[in-house]
Every structure is written in structure tokens, then in C-alpha cells.
Image (cartoon, rainbow, N blue to C red; front, side, top):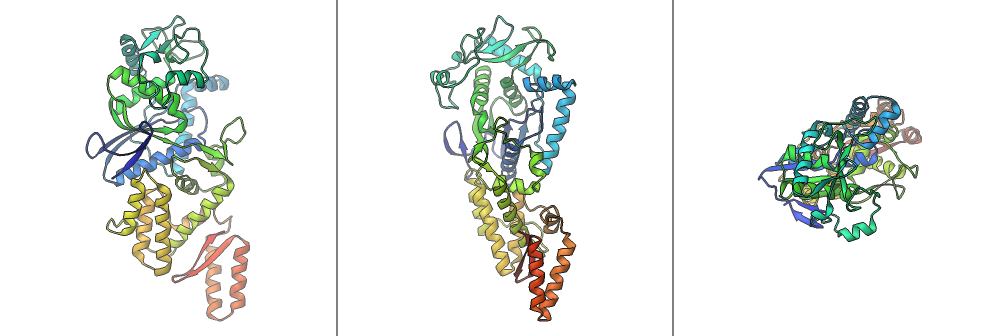
Length: 454
């Protein structure tokens, strides 16, 4: 049975969907004012993997990932550029879609935009005010009163006293408590605004996901995911808003992927170690990046470095190399022991490192025995993870040969084979050394000679 580490419970729990055979999953998406970075890539790939496995397990998944298209950073960037907010956000939504497609990320079933749900946000804020969980302050903003929600802090595991002592909070004389957070911001110059019972203004950030989740999945749903950095305060605030407004549990299972680190330091713009997806894809094949992300467990820190990407490239190349010359289609044999091992790994809180190890076992089996069923299984199980979906030749052509033409490599391999047949071993060795100098490694096996980049 599938077990998921539930951040709320702080343990792995057997996953029991609310409706048998169906899964409702909401993931916090991107704030679209700039190009997506490696942290975004991890969220995209991780929850794409989760939805793929749930579906391959026979579950009917409704996957919602929102787009934040109104926010302080968006407004600031649009004003700096002198452009309309909708033009700015659409440009970066298009860029996000391009990046995610390259990474093999399937589109979510629903991608709601915050600006399309402002009426719902106004309704939820009104309900919170009427129930005594929010108040209209003198400056025109509406704040959520954290003291009104007895379970505030249950996701982060901290009491309000701990949070007040340990968190940096913005000093705002209009708040009743420094931990109170804004639900509605009163209108300011050069900002978009909507009409509301509290005057013109716009919603705060936290309220949007509570509303979009409820709108598309219901007031109570199965899984809510996002990066570890969102656990507090964003997801904590979502729980407080949603459960106070709707008088029911908001989410059953909370999932958070780990941070991305760069050379063992947290990625940040201030440290100058901040990489966009586009930066990385200039150096590495997109599937290599996806493979690099999936080789690590989603909850663990992901340490980005050229060394680790180079290692991922070599490992993925080994899998592709195993399939060279194998004329097979992807097929999953669920009666095979390899499927049972793969399934056991994935059902253990989506343990992709163990699942990837099964792929290498299959590659080794095929290399040694030539068993085409192993090759077909390798391709089928890898496809579940969004891997090995290209032919080996296309992968090799896609930048891993450092500009050397694939046909030229094949021609040299053929010449080497002919030299060996003619017992001209000096020429055969010369060809191997020539290719090695160009970064091409030859591997002789029962099915002939294959190659990979060094």
C-alpha cells in the first residue's frame, strides 16, 4: 500500500483517498514575474512524478497547480518595466510552460490563475470576518486574527508564542497581533484593484490558494504539496483560513519537497548562486536535469553542482546505452520481480532513488543476457518516471556527444569492427583511442559495440 510522509502528522501514513479510486491534489505553483529557477524545477518534476505514479497505480487523479499572477513582486516588476501586468505575467507563463515541457513535466489538469478567483477570495474573507476570524483595520486592510484559531501552528509544530519569539514579523501598528496576516490590501497608487466590501484593493497572497483549492477540489481534499519553504507561513495560513471559514478539515496529506542547495549552500540571489532553469539547460540536456532531480528523494536536500550534473549525465547515458540496438517497446510486466521492487520503492513515500536502482538492475540484466523482456521492462518502468522516452540515438545526438556527429561515431565503430575481423588490432585500438580522445567511450558486449559519452 502507498505510504506518504505527511508533514502534518510528521510520519509516513498509509494513503487512503477520500473517494475510492480518486485523488485530489493541489500544488502551489509559480509567481510569474521572472524565469523559473531550479527550486521551481524541483517542484514541477517532483509532483509530476507523484501524479504519474498515482495514475500508473490505477487512480483517477485531479491535479491542480495554481499560477500567482497578482503579487507585490509582479506589480513592482511591471512598474519597473513600464508594462501592463497581464503582458508581464503572460510572458513568464509562456516561459514557464516552455521550461516545464523540456523537463518532461505533464501539464496539470487544472491551472487556475489568482486573478480569476478574486470574487471567491472576497467571499471567503467576508465569511472569516462574520465568524470573528478576521477584521477590517483602520488603514483599510483586512487581517486574519491568528488568536482566533486555536490550532494555529499545527503544521509547523510551533505554538504562537514560539512563532512570535522565533519569526521575523513585520511591524504594523494596525495589526492586533504581530502574527496576524493580511487577507485584503487596500488600494495604492499604480496598483491594480478590485471592488470589495472594504473598498478597492487586492487580495493578499495566502488567501488565493485556500480559495482556488476549494473551488476546484472542494473544501476538503486529499493532498496539498509544495516546497519546504512554503510550510510556514503560507501553508500554515492556508489551513487557518480554510478551516476557520469552512468548518472542516482542509487537507488530509501535506507533502513538501526539500530545498535546492548549490555546492552545499542554500540557493539564493543574495549569495549569487541562483540559477534559472534556462541557465542550466544551456549546459545540460533537460532529461539529465530531470534524472538528477529524481535520483534524490523528494524530501531530501538537492545539492546542485556541475559535478553532480555530470554524474547524472553519465548515469543516464548508461541506461540509454543499454537500450542501443534493442528494438523493443516500453511494456510493464506487473508479474515480474522487478516491477514488485519498483512498486515497493514508489509506494514507500515515492522513493525514486530505489526505483532508479531497479532500472540499473534491468540494464545490467539486459547487457549480460540479452533478455529483450528486461529491455522492455526497463523502458516501461523508466517511462513511468518520465525517463528514457527518446531513442538512444536521439539522446546521444542531443548534446552529449560534444558536437561529434552520431553517424560519424557509428562509421568509426563499423570500421573498428571490420579491423578486428581482419585481425588488425592496432587499427582497432587506434580507433578506440581516437574516439576516447573525443569523449566517446566504447563498450563491447554480447550484442556488439555500443558507445556513450565520457
